[in-house]
Length: 160
Image (tube, rainbow, N blue to C red; front, side, top):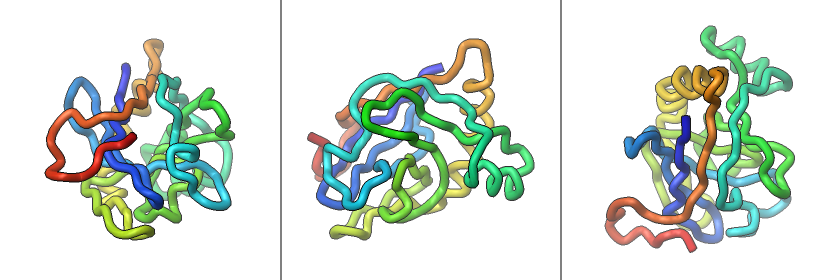
């Protein structure tokens, strides 16, 4: 299965987009990687296609396993240039985005550090079973990262 991360907004504090599967929006996302300071278009995930696997080690996995009985492993994006790891998980502010894609049902874009996703846990619980099953299947799960905007966001600047 292939999901798409369509990046449609970027400024000095956040890179935002949405996840799609078969042209259906799954949720909104904020993205970044481990860094001392976010550098737009450098700390965002490079355009490309990356396999997603279930990662069953580490603190995030252990916390999620306790919190969500259906948890089978963290959704881990693999083989991303210059990244140690990128996880898909919950959170709601730019400060939570180190090394991850934060998911949410609503996106709020604001000045500098006010970019956030809302209803993150609800979004994660909705998409997780399908993505985890695909990642564990013989077909596997791939994420395709692109810049663009498949529809009009009413004046939100597109990603470069």
